[in-house]
Length: 208
Image (cartoon, rainbow, N blue to C red; front, side, top):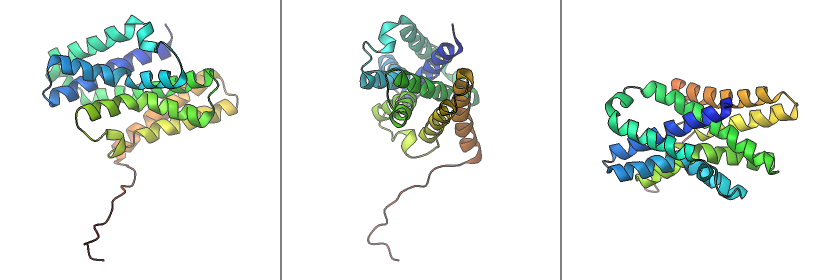
């Protein structure tokens, strides 16, 4: 089993936990938690495969993803208090997850001849759409739209991927650098409190 597949499984597991925790905060029942966890874990990959015309989508072709998501939901439901104490570890695993998902999205896009800018968007979608679905279903403004450097990290990782590919670097270097770039940007942005500028409309009644 290759490292990317293992990382993909880890990312799926962590995203399932993330969705389940959000559902718990909204006091949803176990079925609701399962639905939110599942949507968070596979939502991005499902959208990517549908847009690329890859049918059936990846998680349908392998029982592994279903079992991993269910495990994430059960572990979170049973050991919720313990899981909440592992926030730092979950954050790091989440950063690894979006890095790997970005890489997988780009790789799958290039295999079907998608050009680099769109391939980067496919990588971004793979990494963040699950979280957007999670937050939307739980009546929250999606995290990537208002708070932290998240999508930007994926885009920067995608740029690194194609720059190194253009320079004809070894595959392992391209893959490793892409994932590390996403992780580094995400972790450093949160650690240093960096965020994108907020667009706000000034009320017409406000004085100049």
